Structure formats: structure tokens, C-alpha cells
Length: 467
Ligand SMILES: Nc1nc2c(c(=O)[nH]1)N[C@H]1C(S)=C(S)[C@@H](COP(=O)(O)OP(=O)(O)OC[C@H]3O[C@@H](n4cnc5c(N)ncnc54)[C@H](O)[C@@H]3O)O[C@H]1N2
Ligand code: MOO
Image (cartoon, rainbow, N blue to C red; front, side):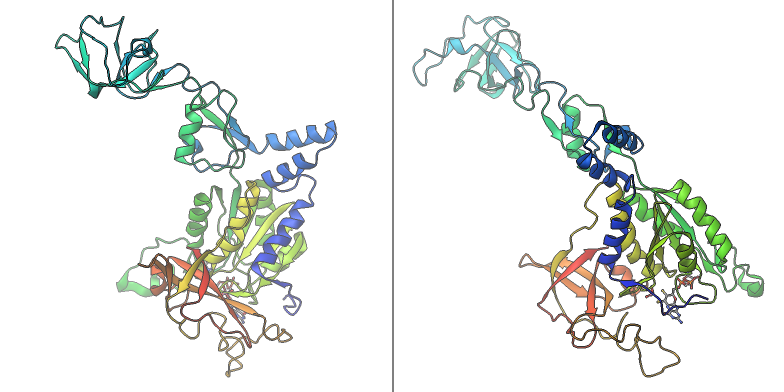
């Protein structure tokens, strides 16, 4: 069993920053982040050629419809001027400005002898003006004869070109319509398409391997007969639900989920799974076996196979999160219980996935006003860290801690709602993350804890993260 007193403990921010720093040192760097760093630093032809080869593995071309949510690898430019001809702005009557130019203000030309196609013509919204016509008035200002060959108008255009859109007024050939690094939204896709682009180059999705470990795990759906409970095949087992969690988050964040079968709590099986995972994935999530139990091997195996970033972190749930780099691939170690795993994926997997795609790793937190006091207790509370019943409570692990600075952060669930005064209000929700009560939470925050640290008071602004 590992000597758990030799733990590197980091905050979540430090753990992410140090993992990325380790990845940035690799010759090819990490995903598109590495390609961008290389492109910025490439000085000679060989370096540029190398960078191009690296980039080739990281970019794919997809149809515009498939590009929503993806990160653009390169700037997208307009292929031609739009509109590509003088275009009618509204459903209109096309006219010649010369028929109005010399008339006194408020006077209209006599249209009695006007011939359709010569002196006027129909012109509709968004289509090219009929040849030779330069100005338009909206059709509401024209009375059209039953045979549609004659008109009477009751208003004049304001100037030459009124009611029309000139060539290139929306975009010019070569204009940058969307910048590299942007995430394609439906509206951005429309602008890209309007520039005559049917497909775009995007950063390929990071492949995220998930390795569930645990002798007690079983996939759900095992038949249960209440009349013969002793023959229940999953007696004393846990249903493996974190695959669903990781898959859902990974796909929501733009990744490709790479499933692994349940791995037994043994050094050799965990090692074999990690070896295969770093071969097929850009990021690996190693689940459970993170704590101090006799079957907990995750940290030992990571230490043996690669470079350890940290063994644990300063928050709960998720205290036993770890990070390592094996064969250039980051490994995120998360603890087993799903309540905590959900946050640690937000804390560690998401920034790595974003960094892989060349995005800013961390997402900003939203300020909200605390609406009422936090309920007492909860993860990381004094009771949990060195309470009175010595044999039942885990001891404080950093007793040398500097007083007045937080030594631990408890994740607290919140319901954040808009208030009438235009602020966001955060209502604490009691209960341990993952419990039924906390399913109503739409956000959470990290509550600093430790000797001399005061909890935020109602009315204080706290920084929340959306769930
Ligand atoms: N003596 C101590 N015991 C524990 C400590 C400690 O500091 N000292 N920490 C506790 C905390 S906090 C956590 S969190 C857990 C961490 O456990 P592990 O990450 O080692 O995970 P396991 O022990 O294998 O499993 C814990 C729990 O989670 C369930 N699990 C595991 N994988 C999955 C999955 N893929 N899907 C759903 N559920 C899963 C597993 O069956 C267990 O019920 O350690 C505490 N103990
Ligand atoms: O690490 Mo545990 O996830 O603190 O609850």
C-alpha cells in the first residue's frame, strides 16, 4: 500500500495549470493549444513544416450543419461579394431615379403612360434588381392595375439607390466572417454560409477515454426478483453510472467519448487499461481507486507509469482527485462516488478539453448575491476534518496550515434565480452533492473553510458555477 503521507495536494486551479504546463513542455504540445503555441514560435522552415504536420492531425473538415458547437481552426472568409448584384431590399416597384431627380419636392411623375419592364417593374426582397433599374419604392405605395401592366404611385424614393442593397454591402470577398478559435453558433453558421462556404475546418474533437475501476461495479439493468432477494446477481454491488456521466459531459463539451470496460481493482489490470487508453485517447479519465483503501491503486499506477501532477486536491467532494501525464497524455483521476465525480469532471476534464481545442481552459464564474445563510456542516466542515470521534473521522491532513487562509473548499449546491431588482440570487440547497435534495440545484460554489475563515453572509456577492 502506498505511503499516503507523501501526497502532493494542489488547489483545482494549480492542478489544471501544472498539468497544462507539463503538457506544454512536450515537443508537440497539447492538441490545438500546442499547435497554436508552435505556430506562434515557429521561426524557420523546418519548424513551420513540423507545425503543419502536427496541425494536419488536429483539423478536420465538416459540413456547415455539422459545425455547430465546433471550434474553427482557421479564419473563414467570404468567397464573393454579397449581395453579388444590386439587390432589392423589400417587396417593391423598381424605378429609374432619373424619373424623379428633377421633380420638385412632393411632386410625383405621371405614370399613366408607364410601361411595365421599361419604366417600372416588380422587384422582390433579396433578389437582384431588374436590369437597368436603380431605385425602388415599397409596393405598398403603388396601386397595380388588374392586368398588372400599369401602376399609380403615391410616394417617391428619397434618393438614387433608395430601396436597394449595393453589391458587397453585406460582405466583400475576402472579408473575415468568423475568426479562428470561435465556436460556431447557429447564427455564425448563417454568416459563414452567406459567404458561400458549405464546409469549414474545425479542430477535431478531443477523444476522452473513461476507465471505470472497481471489483464491485456492474452495469445497471440486472433483473431483481423481490421474491428471491438472495439470488439477486448484483447483491452488494454498485451500478456503474459514471460512464453515463462522463459520456454526457464529454459530448456536451465537444469531445468524443471512448468507452472502456469495467476494470478490476488490480495494479496490472489498471496498468493495462491505462496503456491502451493513452494509445487511443487525448485525455484519460481514471475513475475510483483514488482513496486509501486496500484496493486503491490509481495513484500508485499513475506514479509508476508517468509523471504525477498531484495526488489530491483541497476541496470536497473530490478531495481524492489526482492528475498525471503518461506518454504525453493527461490522466484525470477522479473519485468513485458520482456526486463528487460530477464536479471533478467540471474542474479537471473540462479545462483540459477546452485547452485541447485551443480555447481558454477556465470558464468564468458568475457573480450572484447570497440570499440566505449556508446551512451548517457539509463537505469539508470542521466536523468532518478531525471531529471528536477519532476512529470514525479522517484526520486533518494539513495541520501546518497558515491560519486565516482557506485550507479547504466545500462545494455547496445552489439554486440561482433572477430577482425582481435585476440581480441573481443564490439560495443554498442543503444536502450532500449527489443526494436527491440537491438535484434541484442549478449551480454551485466553492466555500472557503478553515480556522479564522468566515462564511459569506446573506447579501454578499459569491461566484457561482453553473451545473
Ligand atoms: N479511510 C478513508 N476512507 C475514505 C476516504 C478517506 O480519506 N479515508 N475518503 C472518502 C472519500 S471522500 C471518497 S470520495 C472515497 C473515494 O473512493 P475511491 O475513489 O477510492 O472509489 P472507490 O472506493 O472505489 O468507490 C467509492 C464509491 O464509489 C462507487 N463507484 C466507483 N466507481 C463508480 C462508477 N464508475 N459508477 C458509479 N459508482 C462508482 C463505488 O462503488 C463506491 O460506492 O473514499 C472515501 N473513503
Ligand atoms: O473525495 Mo470525496 O469525493 O471528498 O467525497
